[in-house]
Length: 240
Image (cartoon, rainbow, N blue to C red; front, side, top):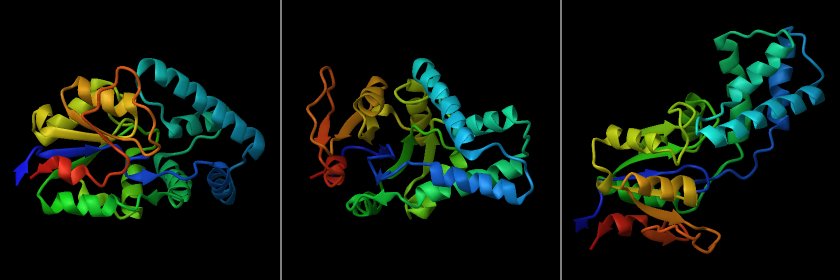
């Protein structure tokens, strides 16, 4: 069997995993309740919830312009700072764990994901994740553990640490360097036409666009493969 690629890099959200629901009112309330139990004097929750998102969305707007990733924990720290609340690193990590584990508990692994990853692993294909995320890297690792996927990947690169977002070439180059492979020997699999497909193409990787909603190919986009699910990824990687 001829092997067309030595490694596959996957996007995370809506490629391997359905995020399902990102409403964070209940998770943020858990954070406030936890601090209240510690005796921290807190502002009104509803006002704080709105303020936190105003801060965060303004950070995201800047991020989309400059390519540097926004980070939610910085938005939360900024909110607390406005109210004279200073938290140490250990406490912030506790809060991030409470917040994100609640959100991650709603995630759903796509039905074909595990079989595809198993098939690639059995063929000796190296695999990694390259993901745009505002979450801390240690929490994204925790998400992979919660969903039973972490052991499939040699490494994961998150934009919150890189610190550039896809489609910036830096994050793809970091992955290529980590693999020690030329871009031409790497297949990138993702759902976002710009961030994943155009971004990976720009550094010389071949691409597989996971188009679950069967949208028309955007003008100017030239994915090497268009898929409705992940099922055919092993066939692309290992041609007969």
